[in-house]
Image (tube, rainbow, N blue to C red; front, side):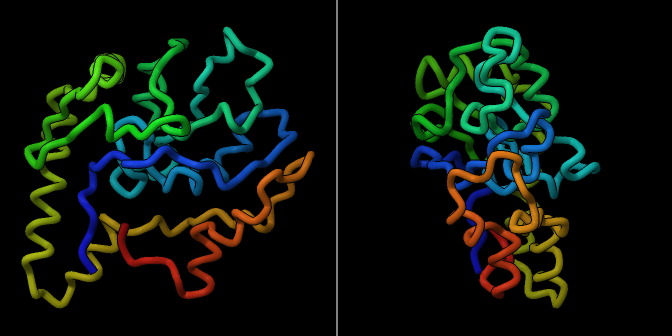
Length: 208
């Protein structure tokens, strides 16, 4: 199965499928957010699979920062999933692009050489804030593209294994069905579409 371009920003706005409520600590939302945003940073699109610490290199991101909107600190719809680098870079800034209100593909474009272009003023601002054009990240993206091209052009017997390792879902999929948010889940039907449930039914793609 062909792997979609690994740094293609969504062409549609993200519609949330989970809605856990009542956790006192934002960190308890992390398993839900991992599944919600496909185990990758919403800003730079780096995946858990590519980080040496897996999900340990990612964190709960507040779209509207806690320092300015403390009442939203534990509101699921104010939370995103981001790598620690992007989260730290954003800090307490407001007005950053929200992937749940508009498609980021309208604002950002990554070339096969790893370069990123801002298609709008808001896209250019996000590049500046999260340093999406820093040399190390550009070179990393270029390397991922080259790796994918090399794997897909190979007939090696280990091709499937390598594809799964770098372009598949992480092994530690959160078991959302077993979680019990204190105030329930406003979108319970989303659990059936979670990665772990799809895996149990044999419907989870090998790559994404």
